[in-house]
Image 1 (cartoon, one colour):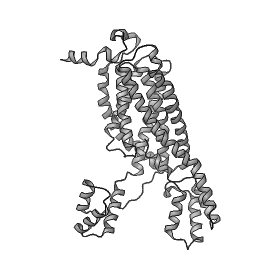
Image 2: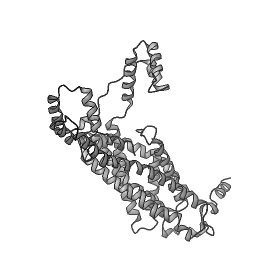
Image 3: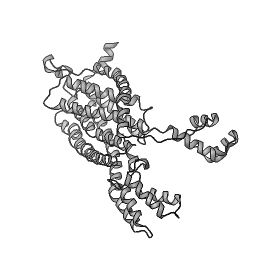
Length: 398
């Protein structure tokens, strides 16, 4: 039975170009390690090892490091214990409609305003803290920078040796661990795209290893790791309130991402596997399957590049236009200009009020004394219009 399964699964027509057999690509012991499909079985226990290692890393390294950088968690009011509301929150909806609010108010004997307040506090209670998001970003940063360094080392003047084997096994084990933890990690706006990316990456790594496409597979992984650690480091400093450092890292990430994902990856890697390879052999199943996975990744790259370019456009152009419009408003005092100046960071934006510098607090204090007649609601609305939360997008992209 096993022999029949192996014969059906590893058909030469599916995995290899026409005219090439498994015997033709076998390697001698002194030439290096030949990729075997059974090697991938080690990625499953390795994925659980990564999960355990992440648990230890976050508590022994990430948490103390977050405190050292000044990461602060917002104090949230815990919702009162109301069993009926808790059941509705978990089983039906986190944001009840007006009709449901009226119905819940009658069942619990609570006013509609208190019902809405309870659900708001309950939603805030489930939101991940800055410390938790910092720990997650720091773990990914540590792995991505280590894997990128290892990938460079495995490609520079090295034949197919044990280094490639471990590079493949560790990468696939890590992405398996991310896929297993996707339900407990911080859920972001591009959740579906992230799941598709992880699945496509796992299939791509596994198939390229089994079919001995190790060279091009290593290039694909290296291209992806080259920008990811910049994004994770930008997230870390964002949670710590280091705005200028975060902005600078985000600019570097954007440049590296756009060059590697929109120029290097399609222009060198995909073009070689999709076009240049036809000069050496005829198309076969492995050719179509491998390139289909690469094109799925490229589609995700275009989607994320669109988000990045849209945000960069808002940073540079819309931010300047909005600032000029606000300067031209009637009745804007000199201190309002000072507030806008301190409010603007590297890209004229600021995210969290708790992370504002001393100059910003001084400007707000001076404004408050000069504009006593202005209501808090109007002032809050004005600040919201002058401060688009660009950093919030940064935390939604992995």
